[in-house]
Figure 1 (cartoon, rainbow, N blue to C red):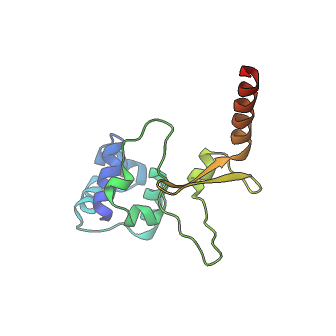
Figure 2: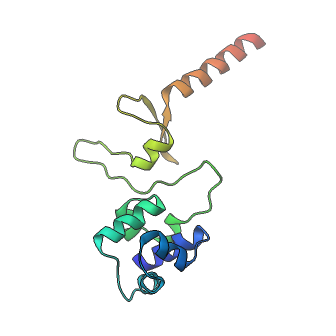
Length: 141
């Protein structure tokens, strides 16, 4: 699975084995061996791969290729899996926090749909949209 994931992520970025090898400081043959499963990167190189592809090390090693390389519209993301701890908490992936500017103390609204699941939304964005809808309805009355 790891080799397939490396190959899929590399190809999705339109990158040759040579270019990826150059980025990581290894030979092209090393990349080829990883991709076909003849060897695996050590922990340091696996961490470099995860950082380079902007995913977690766990997702690089464990997620199915289809989850790693979906064709999503620009601005839409799949950040990987999160696990609920025994206190009912999750940790948002660093990449998600960075892209959406979520910092300690950020206020998020948790939305739910019985058929589609849960989603998080910036509370201010939601309230501004709600206020605009109410004002629009008042103006139409």
